[in-house]
Each structure stands twice: as C-alpha cells, then as structure tokens.
Image (cartoon, rainbow, N blue to C red; front, side, top):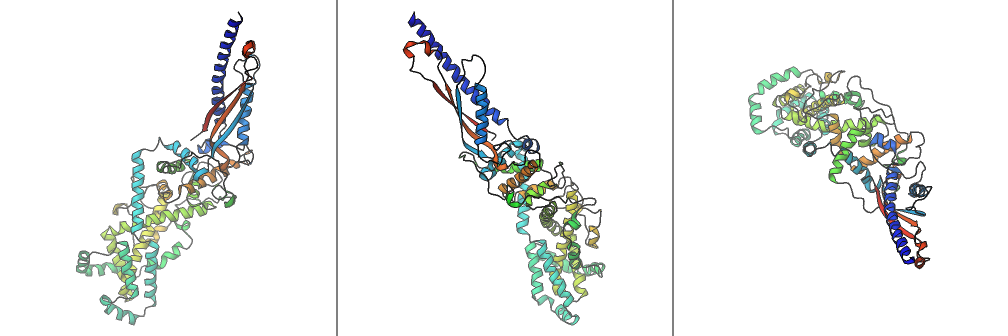
Length: 516
C-alpha cells in the first residue's frame, strides 16, 4: 500500500511540475505584454511611436524602475488567495541587452517610423521620388548658381556706369577682338550654365540682327533688372516670397540647443543586436515625418513650433528662421530648373538678348553684353522662382522644368510680378511643397532628421502636466527579460523516500520586450 501511495504522490508531483512549467511561460508572457502596454500614450497618440518611459516620470535613465515595475507585477500575480497548485513562492527578473529610442543614431526611432508608413508607400512611388531627386540633384550639379550669375551681371552693369562715352566707343569698335576681363566673365558664365548659343544659332542671329536691334528698342529706358533686384531682396526672402494673406508664425523654442535631444549627450542602452536603419527605412522615415509633423502648409494644432518640418530640416530656434532657411533652399532648387527652362526656350533667350543689347548699346559698351545678358537671365529665373514659392505655399504644384505655357513672369517690367496677389501658374503633375521638403531631406543626415524630430516630440510631451521629466533617451524600445521562479514541491512530502531530497525548484523563462 505504501508503495502504491508513493507512486501516486510521485506522479502527482510530476503533474505539479508540469503545471509550474506552463505557469512560468504564461507569467513571463503576461508580464512582458503588461510592460509593453505601459507605452507613453502621448508619444503614441501624437507621433505614433511606441516606447516605455524607463524613468516612469522621474529623471532616471536606468532600467531599474522598469525592472522593479515588472517584478512588482509578477509578485502580485503569484500572491493570490486560496489553494493554487501552480503557485510560485518567489520570482526575480533580470533586464539586459536593452535599447533606448535614441540609440545607434536613432535606429529605433527610424525603424518604428518606417513601420508606420511601409504599407502606404509602394515600390513605384519610391522609384518616382528617387527619380525626382536624381533629376534635381543632377541639374544642381551641372548648372551654375543664380547668385553667381547675378553678381557677375551686376559687376558688368556697374562697369557700364563707370565707363566714359569716349572709352566705350573705342571698346565698341574693337569688341570682336577684345578679351577684357568683363567680357570673359560673361562668356564664362554662359558656358557654365549651358546658355551659350551654338554656331548655327549665332549665324541665325547674325542674319536677324536688324530685327534684334529693332526688338531691343522696346527695352530702352526700362529698369535694369540687375540694378533693382538687390532692393527687391534687401528685406529677405520672406518679404517677397509669401503669398497674400500668409502670416508668419512668431513661435520660437525656449529650450536651449544643448538641452535638446539633437544637442546633448544622450543616455544609452547596452543592446548589441539592434540593427542600423536600412536604406528603405530611411526613405520611409521621410514619408513618416511629412505625414506626422506639421509645416507651413499643414497645421495639426501643436503650439511649440508651427513649422515643425522646417525645424527638422534646418534646426533653427524660431519658426521664422526655419521658414526662411527652407524657402531659400527651395528657391535655389527652383532657380536651377527655371534657368534650364529659359535656356530651352528660344523666345526667352531672344528677349534676354534684346534687353542686354538695349542696356549695353545705350552706354556704348557692348563688350559687357554677355555678362549683362546672363545676369538678366538669372534675375528672370529668380523672379519666376519667387512666384513658384508663393504657389507652393498656397498648396499648389509646380512643374520641375516648365514649358512656355507653364511660365508666368515676363521680362519687361518684371518687378511688377512681385506685387501682392501674384503667383506662378500651377501644374497638375508638378511637385508640391511637401515634395520639395522630401527632396531637401535627401540632402540631410537621417540621424539629424530623427533627432530633430525627437526634439519636437520631447518638448511637446514635457509641456503636459506630470511629464515634465520626460526624455526621449529614456524611452525603452527593446530589452531581454530573464525570469527566475522559485517553487516548493507539494506531494513529495508524502513520499518517505524523497523527504528532504527536494527543497524546491528554480525554473527560468526568457522573453523579449520589443516594439521594433
């Protein structure tokens, strides 16, 4: 009888061990999921990023509070009332290999951001964005800057003023064989921009020289674009590029740059298996930023900065400074494409020829013709680009390289186009403001974009009551959790042969806490 009872209780203890084994797995999963459910609600609701504040409201960048929270949940779970054959007496937890949102050049942030939009972005869309970037980048590399052309044209224009009529007449008589510094500047500028006429075109222009001289008569006495452009731009890009009714935000950051995520020394985890963001994830990051953060044309109601996307791009302290810097960057891209559009239009080149001819012959200094001509072309591209900015800020689209039909401004009385209410013609298949933001982001370091985005997240969340100590580099996104459970045998006490041989069991389980 004793042998039968010993066998029965031994089998019963085996069942007890199986129950404990199942319970440890269940407790480990429940605890891990419980900790994952403690994600910061504001970070998720406003910015769609998951992570647990390891400090739980305290300025503590360790995982001690996180570990204590998990252990507390476990201890509450095992201290139930009544009889429970799967109950543990004690439990401990070790958290290791953990990573914060800001680790490894913000790899966690980039990966989560990419996960938010990866089902919205198709391969064909990525190819289209890449093609747009490559075209604009290539054009920017092969075309000289508008500022340089304008400066060279202004130098030539200033020399026109300083030239005496006598010396100008002498220069005019030997213009074809002269290689003065000013003349070389003009030709050089034309070569860099691809605007010099071909030999066949020069022959056609020679045949039509009388017509050109007649055409130039209508520009005589008109304003010299090279002389008035500086006065138009002297108050900055915001003074001329904003559409009618656009009010610039005066919001500015009060947090010093050295205290922001992008400027301070960050708290780091000890994970060794968090991979760097892939190229695809970096592309998806840009789409996430555009969809999540407000800009000059999209207001989501946040007050810290109104132009969040512009801050992410430029990193300046105020909305005004960030908008100005962003518009100047877009302006530079548009100037290049508008230079190409002018070069592609023989009629516009002819107009610039006539205008330059009118200016140089009026002072009897045709030696400076080339420099003035390309300066005028550059000013024209600049004015059209300013009109493009107005359309973009109104939510419209602009063709990358315009056709004559899509062109807006005219060379004659060009400054009138900068009046209130004027803007460029829209294009159905062109690029919008957000498209240019995306292109500009391709020129930026992805870690810079991510850290500046986290600047905004952190400042916004800190502005909420009880979240004053919140830090993005305390947001836990990944950790290995190793559980140790202690239990005592129940039925071995009834088996004389086993009494004193089994003081207890230690069972272990491992689980991964991760949002990545």
